[in-house]
Structure formats: C-alpha cells, structure tokens
Image 1: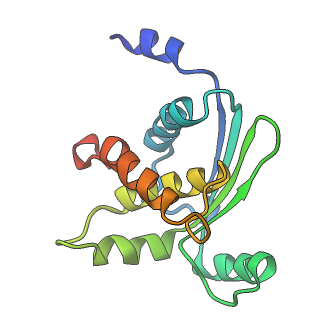
Image 2: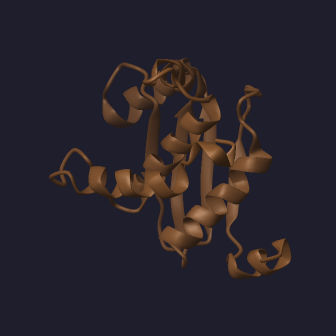
Amino acid sequence: MSASELSALIPLVEIVLQNPNRYSEVHARRLRPWLARLLASLAPRQESLGVRFCSDREMRRVNRSFRGQDKSTDVLSFPGEERHVGDILISVPTARRQAAGAAPGGHTVEHELRTLLLHGVLHCLGYDHETDDGEMDRVERRLRRTWLREDEGA
C-alpha cells in the first residue's frame, strides 16, 4: 500500500506535540504519524490530542496541583471532551531513566516515550489501572505487542 493510500485511510487528527525544552529524544516526525495510526485504531471518531514533553520539575508541580502528590511521575493524562481525546504530559528525564532501567539491557528513549503515550491515550479513553481490576493492564499488554515493536524504530 502506498503512503498516499495509507494516509487516505487514516482520518485527519490534529496532534499537537509540545517540546519546549527541546529534548533531543522527542522525534515529532516519527511520533506524530505513529500517534495518528494509534488513534485511528483505538478512537477513530476523535479529532485531536495534545502532548507536552516536560521536565521532572514541571511534572512534579502538575502532579501536586492535580493529584495532590508532591512528586514527579512518568505520565499524566487529562481526558478531553467530545472529539478531543485529551492531553498527555510526559516527563522526558523520567522516560530516560525508565528506558535505561528496562530489562533486559534497556530500550531506547523513543520506545519508552511511545510506551508512555500508549498508556496516556488509554487513560484518556477512560481506562484506569487503579480501579479496573486489571482490565487496562491486559489491554495495554495486548496493544504493546502490536504498537511497540522494537523493529519499528521505537
């Protein structure tokens, strides 16, 4: 299938990627089409998604403000309304540490960012691993096998 045929199958989704700290591991030209395909598969009627890549300091501040937890975390998700999937905040320094610590032998930061994006999208779609008796974990494990293959440059 040609690129133009593939793009015709993927609905137009506005994906805003903010990288104000200019983290070198954030490759918007690879992440944006990957996210568009993911959203076309999981939420075909949705029209937009926002993602911001941030520092641990910013993540800690937002986590404290919205969840009352005075610590950094890897990803926070804010579900949207109507046709907006939501907004996702990802700490790149935390993603770096998690990628380096992944067993066996770690994986790339881009792979970790995609893992966190998938996790964040699932939260935006209403999944909650803290309350759903393992449903989100099962869904996420299945989706990781499809969407997070190392051979795709992740």
